[in-house]
Length: 430
Image (cartoon, rainbow, N blue to C red; front, side):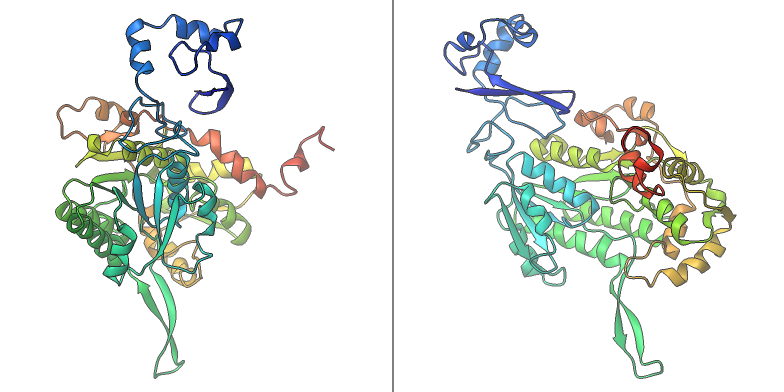
């Protein structure tokens, strides 16, 4: 029996059963549905032109959150989604990061063959393997300082996605001839992570005639920013455009989600520090975007990359907040009662200079610089819509994706910070 699956409300629920339609996908399928459902009635009322088009064209899933497109690639096989071959090879650099795992999940969900660049040992990215069907992922060891190894990652990929980035300069201990005979050396600088490596990836894409490249930059990218991270993000964006002019540039605002460094920072800081510093009073604005929305946007671009060649796509949340408002929002959820202290930027940077040497620092001097400035998209949503011409900047809305409100998601991963957990303040569970 041929079964169908129909997605409702952007993939939030599904219904499966024998195919109720009259599109020729199963002969006499009406015999399995003696009573027409509401869905069947709606399908029957569709125009003959629409029925004919869908009858002659197989459906292929764009992503778990984007509606289907009735087009097949040359060697595509399967119903679309899991257990299918999308006839698309995508190489991903930076797959082990916060955004990278969600991008890989979207790619694997849609039957993409993933080439995953791995700088660590074989176990470092093992959590990505279940995101792809068996045999649909290829993990390749590489070093950003070894161009040939990067060529091996790209191989015969149709699309290359660059997600490489770090909010701090990674450091490692090193010997020195003077007391105390040990110092800290920088492993990868902002210049290397945000400019040199993206430029190398873009040059390789052009050299190896890759069909398309997607580079993830930042909405904070600005040559005049006081943050070196933001300045080098801008330089990296320009370097990619120069080396590979057809690249699609993704510029998200700050990401929020279960592993974020934004909302989790405030919750962790409340339990660790005697006071939580607000840089310059926490008055700078930010407009956080849900990481799954950005991942879905990238998946949408991968599905029809020719529509986004040379385009810039800005990703931003539904609302903007000051950092102080975000902190108060977090503490409303967690029930923590820290002391929020307004401090000038230089005072917070002094504090951050000590904490920056942690293995995974919560705060660094460069982050303080970043938090002292507005972290917003270039325009308002209305201004984006009012743009004319082919050179306009696109948004998630142009990809059919609606920004998820932060209020809808934050509780899911912040309630664990409540003293005693979620059930300690709820009745009826014990």
